[in-house]
Picture 1 (cartoon, rainbow, N blue to C red):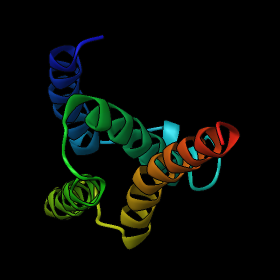
Picture 2: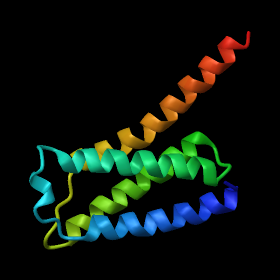
Picture 3: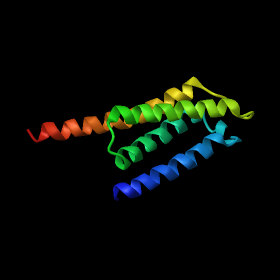
Picture 4: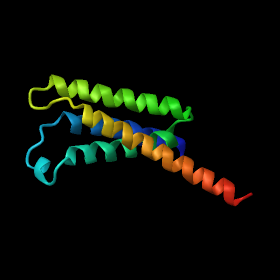
Length: 116
């Protein structure tokens, strides 16, 4: 896929995930303990993948931007009467994004050392 396609996908993802984070959750929250943390982790892992492919910006900037988005989501949820902010959710957001970059770096370093 081209960078433009990833940019469009990133925009659509941000909008869709923001809407999901703003929705009232019923029923699914009881599937297993901490399902919300797993969802936050997965969503931010996906956002990190798409963002990395969409934009040529330094890794630390991407992490800061995703952390800022995660913080903004928690502030938004705190303002909604049927949602609440959670530092645990923010940590899961950050962990999901950073996990992608750690895996990418490990893969890159593994490839580099095998070519030596």
